[in-house]
Image 1 (cartoon, rainbow, N blue to C red):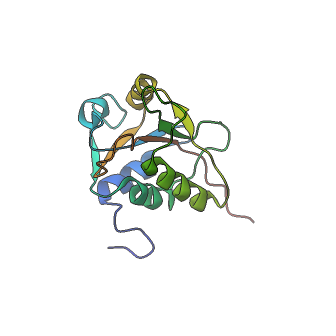
Image 2 (cartoon, rainbow, N blue to C red):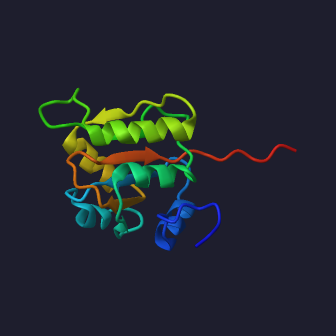
Length: 150
């Protein structure tokens, strides 16, 4: 255990978050997402796991992870097939955590299912959660941490 770091963030996840650079994508996926096969195609090359609901994982990750302010799609969600405008409860819960972490409204952009899979394959890494509800899949593009004021 470390002070000031959410205990959900295990050593493997912390190492990956630290290693990522500006513009790298992080995928946080539900239990039905093909995390293992997709993760083999990412920069990290293996799946990471946090066995907790998606919103709790997102809250923990965003306590350390800056979102990219230079792009419009730094926070994205997988669209529901056939209902792209519908936002299920799991996505609403995650949206609340994003807004809380950023201190303002930061809407997720929708990404069609197969386009989401392709984005995930290009990501730095995939964290598979214990989220069992459908469409609990999210992409977050890493931003920058500014230097300390002198």
